[in-house]
Image (cartoon, rainbow, N blue to C red; front, side, top):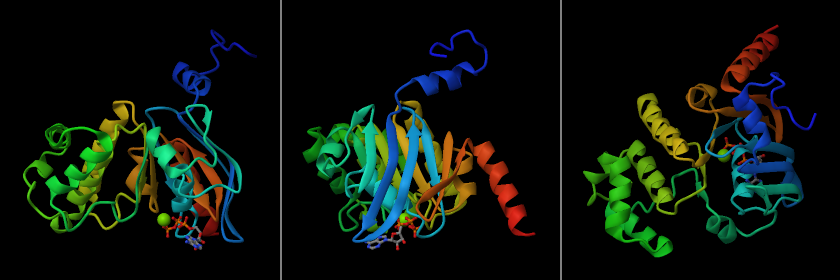
Length: 254
Ligand SMILES: Nc1ncnc2c1ncn2[C@@H]1O[C@H](COP(=O)(O)OP(=O)(O)OP(=O)(O)O)[C@@H](O)[C@H]1O
Ligand SMILES: [Mg+2]
């Protein structure tokens, strides 16, 4: 049925999502370290302006997936599409140029530079003035504005993530990849950060967040995939996933 309009089968929002070109798509992606394959044919799609959470235990392949999306690792098979363009095998610099921004585990800030100096570093790549980047950063994260002269390494963990996000924003990203944003942070801080991430998504930025623990992100993500041992096991809305995880845990306890 090429034209589903008026058929009444699909929620209009779901129909629009299905029809639109996803901002990010992985098709059958395989990736390996040396001879050891760790991603075994991963498929995922994220519509523009949505938050996808990738969940999975230690060693599942979450970071590797982000490395493939950001061009740090080339897939051995399958493809990477951004807004419908095939960018499989493109180098990290090219993906950065088209708007892919990875915030790695450990945050990607300079701990021995002040908040201002960290932001100053982004004036080079972005061609924007310090005042403009600071205004943008402090508008979104006022707490950073109170700490301009503080060494980034002495900020709280949550503030460091805010700085990492603020730095990511200076590049006008289309897609932000967040590797374990919540690591080592108190739940309330994590909620604050995810609220900021949700605000970003509302401005049209597409987000992929990787987390080990489901409860952190289920309240914020639009879609969730669960990967274990390099393959997608479950995917759906947070509500779907919650129900399926619950069923899986019940199944395991038999
Ligand atoms: N540099 C590397 N060299 C060899 N093997 C690696 C390397 N990095 C990761 N691996 C292996 O690849 C698999 C996937 O690792 P990956 O880091 O993607 O998992 P993850 O889901 O991010 O785990 P974690 O929750 O621990 O961050 C694991 O078996 C891991 O041991
Ligand atoms: Mg990881």
